[in-house]
Image (cartoon, rainbow, N blue to C red; front, side, top):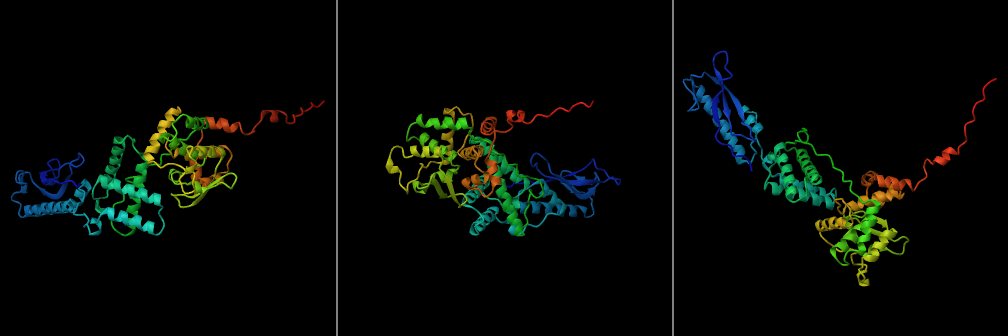
Length: 424
């Protein structure tokens, strides 16, 4: 909600005495963010003329009339800003007092949410926004409305966006999700995109990102993946958790993604009919939910082993139109994975997406070409795929055991240098 400003007061600035003995009259507003906005009105009088109680100039030959008109103008414009839902800031008050404030037109008073929805709808109509991205924009819009029921174009400011960021941190902390850096980054990127869209429409709007008053935080890269031994321990849990339990079903789906690299949305959607069992190895082909691209992934031996457990002993579960894995909410899946990690003595905060990083990393170590891996993972460029590949000391040891580089014996068996003979 916009701050409701109390009646301002006038005072004589006695510490700024001029050569003629007169002092500037200043106007003072209530505190905003613990700071008291105070500005000179450009009108001076002597201490003998100033009526502190009546807030007026005595014996002024019309100067008091000018003062009162100026004060009424300021009060009127402050009230007008409040009525229009404008956020009252120290900067706005300074503009009003100086007479340099801009007149707010009808467009600036329109809802920021209206243009937010218009922007993503237009992007969707021309096919420039994927369904998954549409959903994340909707999440941002919901978060904004939870933060403030209505935001006008004119309300957009550094302070408002700072307050929104603090709201996201507070909400994340209360929900035991920490400071939600990745989520906050997405929210800010979406808001910036809509601000740029409004600018392109030639509607005046403050853009704290253009003026560098605000910056989008750096993307904090998630480096969590499973080492080879950790993947082995997770696989061993198949025979330790109860068949048909949520743990069992989430574990199979996660392990399958660790050795195929498919996203959680695709893992929840793939059907038995998507497997081409006539090929060797078996090929899983599907249209990725996120990118709408056709993806074909080979079913490596470990993935095939996981598929053997998926029917849960019932051959009727293996029908072309049936999903391979059971559907659960993503939040429950990630919670279950962390419980499984504890059982496997893995001290990592894993989520389902860590399976993609695990697949990418282990595939590269196993020697799969980067371009092939890009296609397996449904990426548009190898640069994206490279971000998924990680490194560790144990992987360095494992990879070194697979190659013969810099063998000492080969260097030692090279032709020895013949010593020069001394001249007689």
